[in-house]
Image (tube, rainbow, N blue to C red; front, side):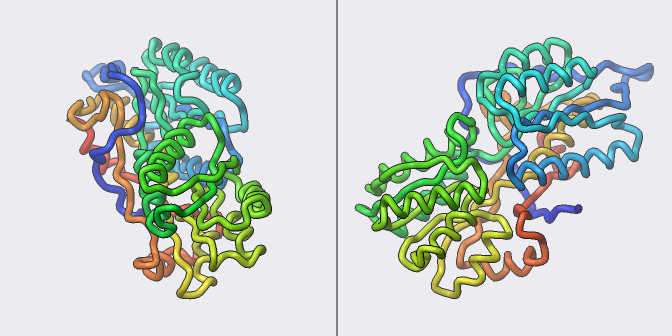
Length: 355
């Protein structure tokens, strides 16, 4: 399915949360007889978590982008290692791709650092590696994605303003230990501390709507007098459903998500309901594929466009708020409830990152 593009723009000034300086290999792929990179190429994808609509849409975006190159004869195969697994299982996924002889690997990592050794195994063999959605520390890997900390700060600042100094909130997070979760909650927690907002407790919702709903129901039973809820994408619909079941949706303010299920329920709450949905586009994976194909064909990244030497940081879209809700909803209401507001940089758009 062709995804809706929200016009993802240039590199953001804020960097992804990664450590240290970096040394990305920017060497072009082996040359053909006329001095140009040989093809067709094979690209592998490692995804170690499939329990969300975000990841399903991410893979669909990658497959759609890959089909363009396959039709042109530039891409021979897209090899998917796509299954729920832990860090050790994802290490095996990457090794499977190395053994399959891929030219580049796109990975949505389960850890920010635990995969560094296997990434080094790949890059030592001349395989380009791109981490999407969540940043990794490996200096030879190119991180492609939004600034997850800035993503979290955007909704945390909104919620802090809504509940005010002295307000009390709870948080329904993703999966503890995942790099995006840690970057997000670290940034959000700092916002609440600076604003004088009390965080009573946090709970893991696993980026799953049903789990998020159950966790919110449990939190309401324990903390019946909270002022607000901060949550990540993938769980806001469940959180709102729990608030509605407890008849507290008009008493407790919550951050939301840029997903159709939540937006649809938002639209049914009437004019008095307010929330915020910050866009985290699944299309980042397809953007990374366009970058990978350009590099495989011999193009070199412009180091001036990289943060920390190996981060391509994409600007956040304008968040969904009460101010623009009607406009955004009119554009996407025909999509299924699982649809995540999306954007993909085209193969022409990614040229800004190259010399």
